Image (cartoon, rainbow, N blue to C red; front, side):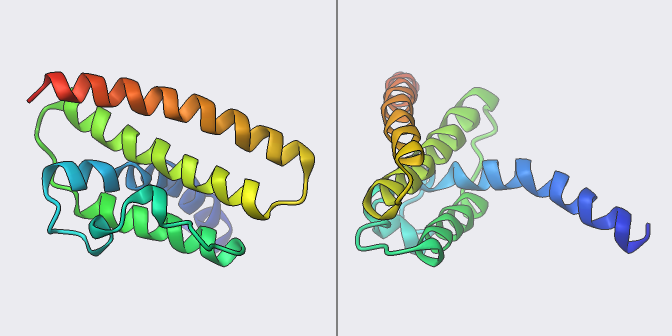
Length: 133
């Protein structure tokens, strides 16, 4: 594979991996709190005081790191719910950073919509996961 075909291939592979990775922190905190350094800091607090794109990327990277370390239960439904919950929490964090630091009214409106939708879905995942214990 040459360099020109490798770059798009890498991008296509990274999107689903990033989504899975973003989903891991709350699930890890739920299943194995001591495994990830970021598990000691609630995902909703990671963005506090964030000022720009580097902070947004740092928050995303922490979530991805925790997701990689999340032990899988072997139950596809439960693993899906835990990973998606983490992914949605990461979207909340980024949307809150946009509200705090963004300048575009259009992006701020989208961020508000994302916050409402993601909170609702996180609550659904929480409710389902609570019944699995």
